Length: 259
Ligand code: IPD
Ligand code: CA
Image (cartoon, rainbow, N blue to C red):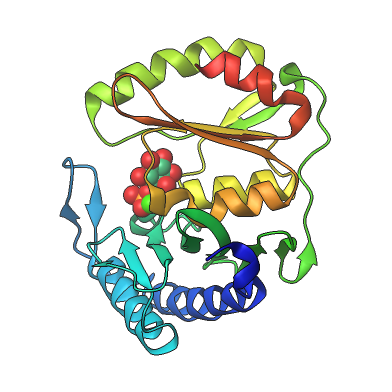
């Protein structure tokens, strides 16, 4: 199957519908005193809400798209019978969520034979929907999005993030220290999905991060690309993947600065 064989607009609407329902669930439970369990390190948290959100998304996908595959951050794994697979982050920005900081999202991307074709990111505390379909552009609450017109890296506001392991962070800290004198400033928002939507909306000029996972970026990368950004994911020698998104005018400079 190729992207022209599927209705990417319909897949986008499915992602939007499910992301909104899951986002309403997580926002409605944001004031609970949640117990966090540790995942890859003591600071990498997962809560009952992450799991409940993923369960809701998986059950809705099973109803609406029974033969499709699913990959979810909290363990959902279903092999596709159709070539279509949904990549799900049920709560991106879990640490913000735990601390009552309103930058957390539900991210749902659809890929066809590994190629991103549709996606939605729901900024759950603000009730803002970002979406995209391959070739149909990116939108925020239905209005078209375009990335920023920044022309020089020195003027760019760049988002990034850090992994949960201390040794990963030590290396990331050195890289960001080298970048900092060469950009307008750095932001660490705490949700890779929202960082990528911010690039799409021009509220960040660029974004890079090492070590994020397919579920963090599946929808957001397509949203950024459909808004005109250049996007790039590469596996580096240590096995970690570097993800970069930026407007064409600064893309090469940002990539060179962070590699
Ligand atoms: C994290 C966020 C964060 C990024 C981390 C991710 P989570 O996802 O996207 O911004 O820096 O690399 O793991 O744990 O909140 O789902
Ligand atoms: Ca995540």
